[in-house]
Length: 124
Image 1 (cartoon, rainbow, N blue to C red):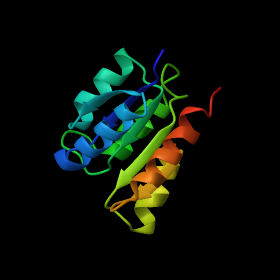
Image 2: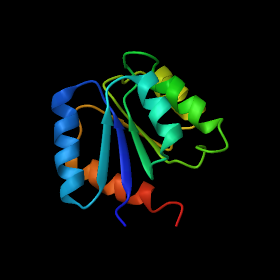
Image 3: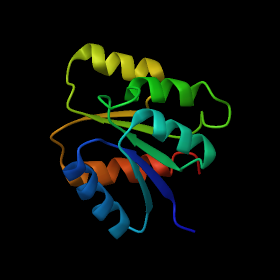
Image 4: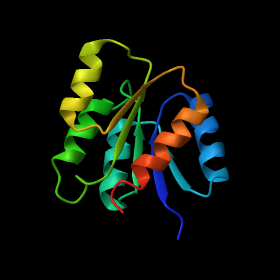
């Protein structure tokens, strides 16, 4: 059964690149661009991995991460933060919220795919 990756990204171009390449690798991909809608969908259908931007409509990616990591039904989901925010405070906030990885934009696609593979197999 294919693993499911949930992407929360409001930049359509970045989302399309990620979706295309992850589906090509055999993953099932769900995409949402709003933080609050994403949170509601994730708690209904728990994915194997979450790729999460910080700056989102609705609620921020940091808040989504924090809510999920504090919920017993979702706290084991590996969370990769993928963001244009490069300040140390943003990194610290993401890690404090429970993120498992932090990648800044622009990114190397090969790096994303390698880290996805590592994170998605983390709980095996």
